[in-house]
Length: 190
Image (tube, rainbow, N blue to C red; front, side, top):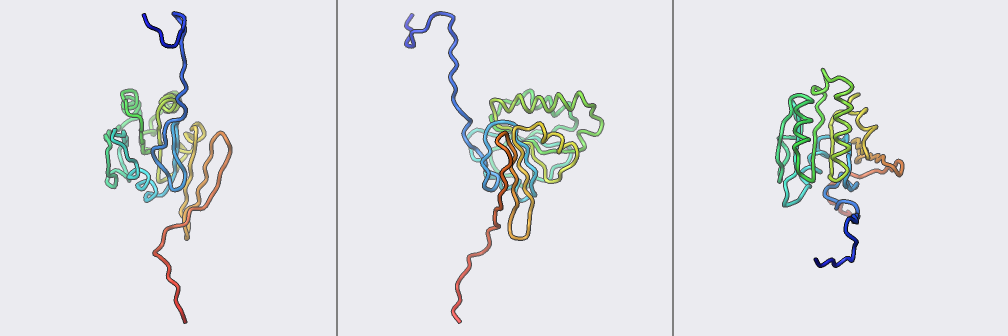
């Protein structure tokens, strides 16, 4: 048998392909592989969802009520989970490389701590080789708890002239301001 690498039988080879390619951007923050939590206004969420471009469909998962579902356009496979157990089942059967999950606080009303822990560990496990974006337009205690276990947390707050962005990951905290795009300014001569 021809062996182009001249390896001994039984030797395993690990090839590090590096980070997953960047697929989406939240304002000026590139989102790459891992378990990412994003809290942002609805217009920002719709912007990064509709900015996803790939010939392979992404999985979009939402619960009982969705603020963003009516506004998304693109190559998405949409699934709804009405309980935390259904959401876990959907994620266990997911094969997509990009997974968007819209936070729904109602799913966690009757959830015990062990189920919540299983859910978070599943998000982290899926994020090892895929990109998971768990997002909300309204933060609550459950979402804030989930962000403490995420690989990366992006908080976007709307301000008068733009958006304040705080990005927290293993490197620390990166804060910036992203100005809103307004109509082109012209100079007037008096």
